Length: 127
Image (cartoon, rainbow, N blue to C red):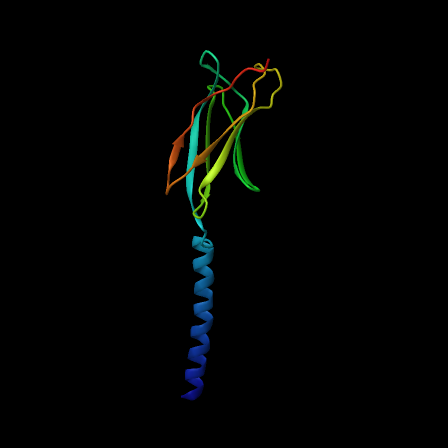
């Protein structure tokens, strides 16, 4: 009877450890944040859509990047830090003079729980 109890406890411990591993592999590790997104349209003066503009949202060493499409639109989804939901969004012309030459522009954005922010921007032409 004593051996049976010890084996039962051992089996229970092994199954508990395996079960915990299954939970982590199914649901992932807990994170200190939530997913949010920012989207919009980048235009030149005259409301002309700009394709190929690099859009970066960043805070410290963390950053996410995308490029505008043919209609000047962009969309970024990323993990927002609960403790500091303030980020910088930057719009940069990286294709040279292919669609004109435009000044880099940046702005601050702050997110609340599950916020989706629309950020349309007009870039100024370089002189």
